[in-house]
Amino acid sequence: MAPHTPTTPLDVAAVVARLRATFATHRTRSTAWRRGQLEALRTLLTEHADELVAALHEDLGKGPKEAYRTEVGFTINEIDHTLAHLDDWLASRPADLPERLLPATGHVVREPLGVVLVIAPWNYPLQLALAPLVGALAAGNCAVVKPSELAPATSTALARLLPRHLDDEAVAVVEGAVPETTALLEQRFDHLFYTGNGTVGRIVMAAAAKHLTPVTLELGGKSPTVVDLGTDLAVAAQRIVSGKFLNAGQTCVAPDYVLAVGDTAEGLEEHLAEAVRERFGADPAAAPEYGRIVNERHFDRLTALLGSGRTVVGGIHDRATRYLAPTVLADVTPDAPVMREEIFGPILPIVRVPDLDAAIAFINERDKPLALYAFTASDDTRHRLLTETSSGALTFGLPVAHLTAPDLPFGGVGESGMGRYHGEYSLDTFSHSKAVLDKPA
Ligand code: NAD
Image 1 (spheres, rainbow, N blue to C red):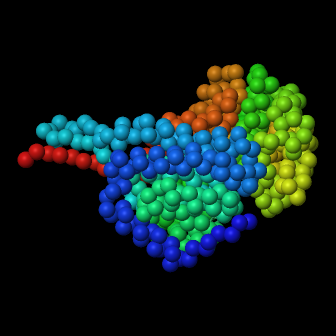
Image 2: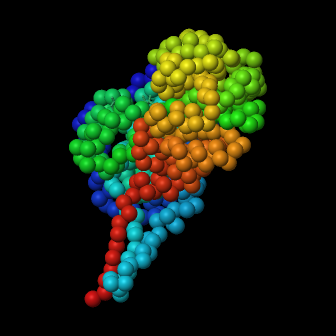
Image 3: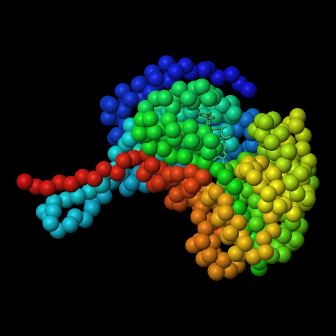
């Protein structure tokens, strides 16, 4: 692990005080400043794309195409979308007033919150630090970014590049692990934006309560994929494989497990094995676009789950390189170890359910997922999943895709989180919608 400069609690307080002083000058409120910061962030990403892609490879073995598309390119798209709509999103919105108040005018103005904290995880260490930052800057805030210590190369790159390209009196990077994050959480922020697991999410929320700070918690969980009767299994298998094994399964919205309705499991097993071979070749260890497990702790956790079912494809692993092949497990029972917690790795269990009623009951008996996916040819199934289940997102026919659409809100519900972002939803998260009423004398 690369060394990081430890930040003492005193340093952290000074960083926050510096940003607060900048916010008090009001300069971050102008649209020109916001645009300038977003354009500078875009320049950082384009000028340093190769070095960022290399850092992502070092941290997670990400292939260059995947690293660019899901991290650097993703963030550039978010910036471009924001720049294209910023004037519109910042325009004050007239509000209708009740007749008894007339003559008068009413409108709603989005105002920045102040100094916000973005705490990022290791799995998409660039995207999940910078996409929230895009929203924070677009909304006119100052921001502290705390990258994940488990992706040290990306963390170091962000700490070096962000202050060089952005207004360093308004944006700061604090590197570090639990002590530094704990010190940060003692400070008063105007919004906390945390992406990661629910255990730390609770720590963040408890810290926020002390200062009455609003929080966004982007958490995870087990996202099911329902494969209904009458589905084109070859298409479903290809798309499940591409969503599941992205970043070696270390994606918060990856399909966690398949709920195979009726007899779909048999055909699906073969198609999934075929789709894995098609995508990663006979030896995925040699595939340039197949990633590695982030560290040995996660590697050991994952390999301990391999006995949870019959191996359809994969299962091969190598601790020295933290390689775990794309793996599909069949005949998995609902109480198998692999079904107890979010997998967050390249293991796809298939659980059989007799019918759609059983699939819906299975989903509703568990925590509300970050995403629910379904492959179906039936409008009735679509309607039932839409109205009888709850999840952060519901996507038919293409797992993971919803998060690339900036006009769709991204976030969880219940155990999968609270709040949402991307596009205009980020503006909402990082702004206060102020009611303004003007009554003439
Ligand atoms: P992680 O271990 O990198 O932790 C996230 C952040 O929390 C880091 O910055 C870390 O320094 C900080 N942290 C860790 N322990 C802390 C503590 N005790 N006190 C204060 N801060 C602490 O990432 P992770 O949690 O392993 O990430 C994986 C989880 O995140 C999965 O559950 C995944 O589904 C979820 N996730 C969700 C999203 C989303 O957008 N909803 C995206 C990615 C990951």
